Length: 141
Image (cartoon, rainbow, N blue to C red; front, side, top):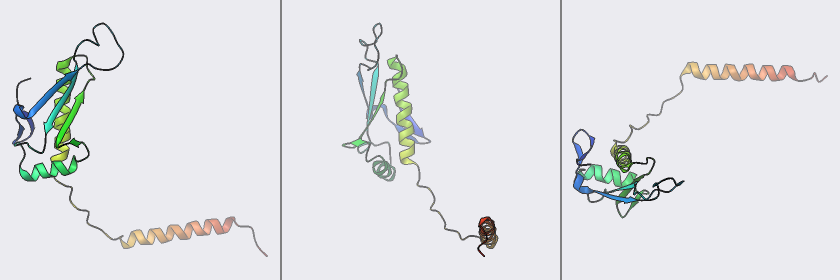
């Protein structure tokens, strides 16, 4: 799996900053399923990376705060039987998580006021509902 991980445009995570760990997958057994190390854990130290600018690193650290252990992001994959497929899956997961973490913040909402027409429609609907309910009442003589 040689190669760097491209997050977007010029943001590239060098392969030297990625650490891999392999273990046996859990789940139902089968012939040789419990003897091969097909579960993959990909570790990426967000706090010490050189791939991100200080602004992007701070943004990622604040957004991933609950997922990080000592500044390290851990992604696991064990869906496939093949270690290679699980490695590809873990890389895709890491890229997706990091893209969400370094995305620019959304534009602030600009509060708006209801239009005159929407106010009038609301009042008309209330009057219509009130009339309907009043007509359902029994006459009180």
